[in-house]
Image (cartoon, rainbow over all chains, first blue to last red; front, top):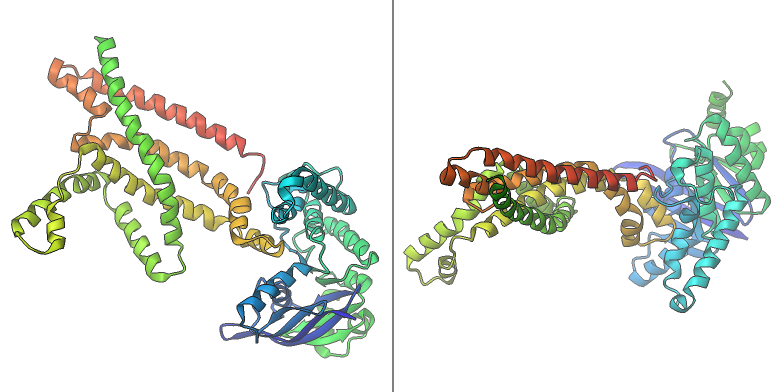
Length: 260
Length: 231
């Protein structure tokens, strides 16, 4: 069953058409890598799916729940759509950790704010907050940072910061996790730890969409690869098909720039 | 004599500090409101506020003190001369010269709120969009994002320019002398007329130095307290 469905998605910035009709779907538990040169629209696609940009037209649904539909204008329906967006997690290129919170605080903040709405919050406050801390510690342990719970982002390396942000995204219990060039802001020697973390998540059958420039990693970890060029999907298939035996000359040209 | 002078200057300084503290109490929140206005998405509000800030920052505070102190009186006199039945003019006729301290306070609050608003605006606009986006994808509301994530970062960023501006305010209170508000310069000057002594006026500088020294220490402490994270 397809967990992510993107249908005829377009996005214009003024007169510039950045996405020109993107259609694809992704099965649950699969890993999709999106590659392509800068300006091909891959980051915009990610941002539209995550609700950071509003697409111009088209439809997106996650687990058969609509998260974007350009034809819907009804206020209540839009509110429901906003709620459905909670099923999507996003890891940023620049981490975007909250500097004044510890690693643990970064992971728990959103959960603790959300817990305030629970009807039993006042009564069970202490228990609820302890429970949240426990969940957060579990995720930080998963990304190998159980010894850094009390450290502030400025005390962590880039790789550790990115792993905190992965734990923070996981803590929302998303049905799909998106990565926007998760290693691009890191020194080459630090990218390994992030790729290792993502690989572990893949083994746990986490559904993931990764925008990346790490071709070898994409080949290695993905079930499917999309090559985007000039706002369209130029080629799509298994890593073998797209990265090893590309048919589209534009894919070939793009991959050639990496081999040099 | 030294003791008499010190006592008299202390009384004047109490009034100086009152003007200083009240200005802060009103100008700090007003500045935040003005900064929101200057960042408003509604263009007319934005340009109105920015023009106001331009006028206040572009003219001397001393001139603003004089205008706020004298102009209401002139308006009242002019309106009374009109003998008009127009309700608005009748209302204007009730205007009279403000009390000196009140006029000075009003001028300081308006002037400093405008300077503070620009500091707030700089601080708020310097926070990366990524912080708001991270809050958004984590399901936080806009106000949660501002109060739980952004605000403390803004505070940390604006402490240095704020401390600068607040220390300037301590000394700017002496401008109130121009509309004869009773404050420390006035008490120092009084000894020239009464006893022919010039040194009490110079001596007032010690009080300003002490106040600014204390504020410097206070702001250093706040800066240290917020040094556990970097923005």
